[in-house]
Length: 255
Image (tube, rainbow, N blue to C red):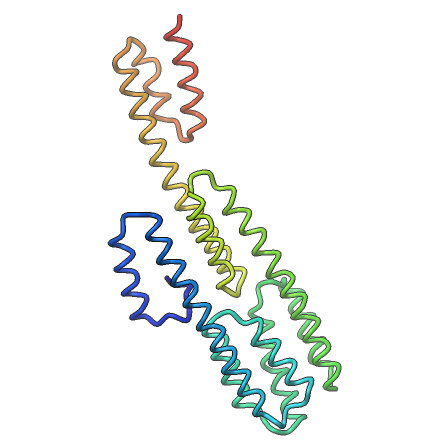
């Protein structure tokens, strides 16, 4: 629920209680799909609301309007849109002051942008501070943000592959985790989602290993091979190890 930024805390708590009471995977992910769609609808509505604010700012140059529209279009969380809404309302009506304030805000954003290395961010800030004319500033910002967008989607693709190759998550679970990637705005958050998917996959693997161990141990205890194999079975950490032991046991039983 934490990645649905357009749901309030009461809604999240109510939905969490409802989800906890469901024992069907299909029903659980039906609820998640509904929440995802509601969250997206509110995102679009918030974007449209701020776009209307921009239209009312007749003091903004065409380049400035294009800049703010671009920022809104590529924002995905409630916090970011609130920040943009505040910035637009705070913005001076005077062109030069507008530009200086935008440079200050962009410097703040660049410093926190983990899609670029520290060295890249430092170079971007130096370049931005050296620019003094509107055309140069906005041209640089559009170029930087386009590169950021490219890295953003590349990271989504890479993260999606890491989730997709998990062996114990169901297709619905994989799609759920993958869909969350588009709801966050930082590389760190994407990594966090991938780690959650991997941990869930690992917990399923642990369950499968435990079940398989118990089944093999039961068979071994009923045979004369218990002392020879029980240690190997108990120490096995992966399904592949247990399957190899099963093959060896089959060979032993056939002798």
